[in-house]
Image 1 (cartoon, one colour):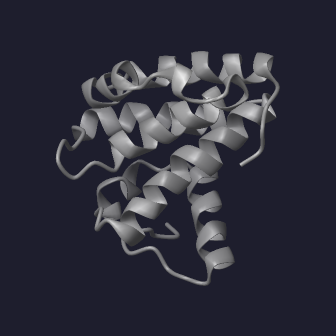
Image 2 (cartoon, helix red, strand yellow):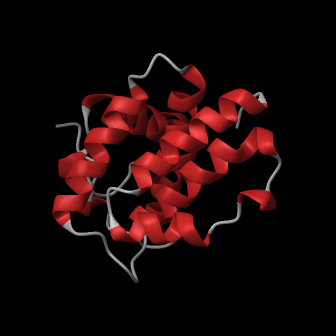
Length: 140
């Protein structure tokens, strides 16, 4: 995880807050999260990680229509010219969903249809880097 300067982290936190508003589950997760629990330079990373955890929750699944909206915005953020934000989305949000699939039994096939090209490419490369295959992740 790359450490950001506080200004970049604050921009990332704003982007994460806007993303979180797209579903009740992600919004609730962000409301429960305390930014004071991490260093300011890690705000965006921690916020995107919380959103990834909400998406990968087996106890409180997100509706398909909300997943569609979330992943459209995730794709936009991954294509952002703000490399700090796009990096946090990839390394914190997407990797958190990946971890939940491999370590907590999250069914990745629930999000696979909603992945945009950048998210899909990143996760396929992450699989390759880790020498594994994510169940439910399709090359499309």
